[in-house]
Image (cartoon, rainbow, N blue to C red):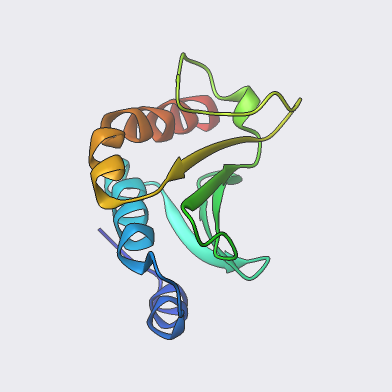
Length: 118
């Protein structure tokens, strides 16, 4: 898994009660497909392949909020992608156990995105 030093530094300096959960979500996304990359956009860790897939909202403190910028366009049935917006969808991770229980679904969202964009 290749990480971006800019994101590494950002996370080192980040004061967040769920930093370990943020890291677990990050690792899951980056390990799901070698084509995924990351950067800091909008003051948030953002994951990309042929466009922006998702960003972590570091301002949320009760859970890790992962916003899929065009989540409504990702093909497939993903029961934990929340939101009725025309474009965006969200997944929320309050703890490491939730990251683990939703790992396969999150990996499937990444895979579907890469197929869509590839």
